[in-house]
Amino acid sequence: EPKKDRSESMTLLQPDENLITRADVDENFKQEIMDAGAESVAVCFQCGTCTGACPSGRRTPYRIRGVVRRAVMGLKEDVISDDSIWMCTTCYECQERCPRGIKIVDIVKIIRNQAAQAGYMAQSHKMTGLFVTKTGHGVPINDATMALRKSVGLDELPPTTHQFPEALEEVQKIIKATGFDNLIGYNWETG
Ligand code: SF4
Ligand code: SF4
Image 1: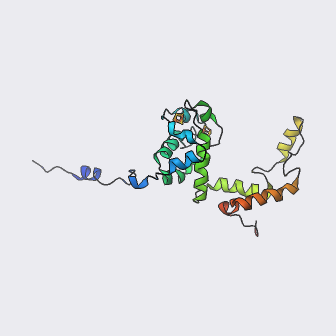
Image 2: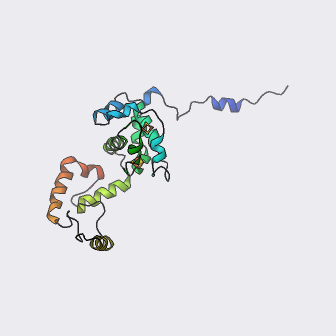
């Protein structure tokens, strides 16, 4: 009888580098999220309603149910290094529908804060941060927006740094005091 080719079964016995082990678990991570104000994370029962409601997840690899699950499991590095967490638009669709009343958006924000501190902030968010630092606005106003504001009876310029340019100094003071300038790599000399 010919010898069986065992190469395929041997391959299956190789360690899977995607396998989660105890070394990947940060025991404090779930507690950190709870302490930061999202104590409700612990009662998630993984129903998936949040992912079903998420408009961002329909167009991107982002799956909020999995993010919550991995946070509860303490997979800190895995979650904060996940590029998809920056695809949440903070629209609150998931939070309004969660049957457990979990503060899902707070969880996303806390995870993003930790991701930013660890150097994982998405480039697009850094660019928005640069606009805020330079102008006081994430999205500076343009002619079309000014015309739209006027057409609905508003001042062409909103009551922000656009109307009060002197307030930019206060915005920049906050950015320096919080260290946000370091997170986005802003250079005050070169701009
Ligand atoms: Fe968990 Fe709420 Fe999402 Fe259901 S909807 S998986 S309970 S976070
Ligand atoms: Fe999805 Fe974020 Fe909106 Fe929730 S807040 S539905 S996670 S995009």
